[in-house]
Image (tube, rainbow, N blue to C red; front, side, top):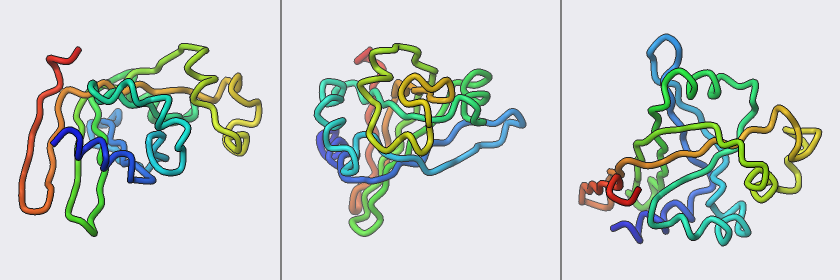
Length: 151
């Protein structure tokens, strides 16, 4: 099932990130899937993380996501292909990753639209998501897998 889930991640152009806001209410937002078809070079770069289901996202330092992560790191990612009845929810912990090499490696041409100063833009932040478990629906089957033993 894990291989099928990795294939699902690679096929989804977007991912839904849910954090917990200051008021305790879940905050869901659609984000670019850095491991999806929009970024084939990143799929190859991030492939060594497949077994851990570690995941990276980019966001603005000034966004509410940063406040959410700093106060409550618990989060989830949702990948979904409704046309084939396949979804994966990863539950885990989100943190700001300040590795300057990673920032440059994940940087993509065109992101200047969001971060005008390029990969050194102070408003460009990388979030690292470490999965605890995955669960979802595939066709007519519910599934669950624990990822904590991989850490």
